[in-house]
Length: 521
Image (tube, rainbow, N blue to C red):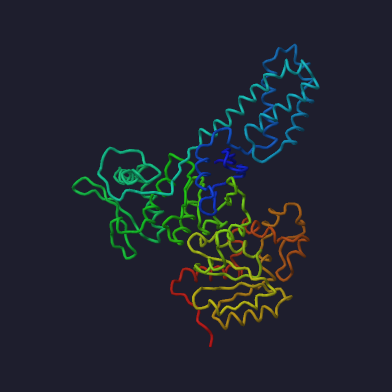
């Protein structure tokens, strides 16, 4: 996996991409340079590659090389050789700490070696050069080999905006599939016609399985007619087979994406406008399948807010253009949403809206819904209301069109507001669940708290009091770490609680197609 990249094109302003993960998204308006960024990533070399290293790794490199050179040095010089070691290791450690960073580039290593060499040569002089020049020469070679090796083991494929799978074609000599879609059809047919249980037939079945999951049960087939022509077919929602020419482009695009997402020839996939021709529901399921069921690293461009879902997307970069292409690591997505013209109405395409009291509840609920496998299958949105104004929300404006369920705390401080909110929900047919414990944080396990806060949690704390504010029990406010704490827990940790029953109710609502709450009279 690529940890970091420097996009050195003269048209890109500050092209450092740090802390890259499995799923990396570039989003922005049209014609700001997103496609250019993918092309730059595709053509990176060892000088543009960043690798995660720490000072301990660098210190160990020096120690290993010095031991090697000492063993190759005549024994009569060992005492003098050893007399310099304490100073050398001190300088190496000091300079490494001064230069410490998460992502290192070849130029960073080269500069560090030069600084260490200069300082030691100034202090020790000619004896240092005589004994240790070879150490630095070998370190330079080894670090260069490290970066070159990372480049060689990285194989990327770029899928352009315009993709065409060729719905029908004559069977000819099998050629390598192209990311534009050319030759994908004949390669898939080749996969399908191999002996059972071979690697290629297993690949074909895997692609079919993922295709069905993403399309909610649709299927594809490739048939050869009596004139030796291949034809692509898809099923419609009632199971009838139709030629690909009579089906939407989204299914064809999806097949190309899945072919390369499962190809053993590549470990990195770049997709320009991944959402092209795909219904939002399929976009969401595609995102889940690529993240959870393939082993590739992804770099994608998109205009779709679905690909901003931080339950599946690891990094989001906002791309803009002012004289040059600007790339900003956008962990705060509000700027992106505003720039793209998205608003709260985008949430109304969801299968379910969960109303919560505050933004810190959102991460907890999302973590547990993800563990239940619901976020990948359904478009569930969570709206934090703000505890003190929740009773002012007019639920009647969307009660007849959207599924809503609410979760509220039990702390006594704002009970009058909650009572009015509960009445509002009941009047508008909205399911509302009030937690049995003080707040959602009271469902955390002690083990998860210890794992996140390390030594900050008292050894005397053996269980969480259900009716007392967790911050008062811990002596620290956990809210900023709510998502992280929940991620350290399993569903078994809450299995016997009413919070788990609430999550089961969420599952029931989204899986029951005919669900519509009945209004009270």
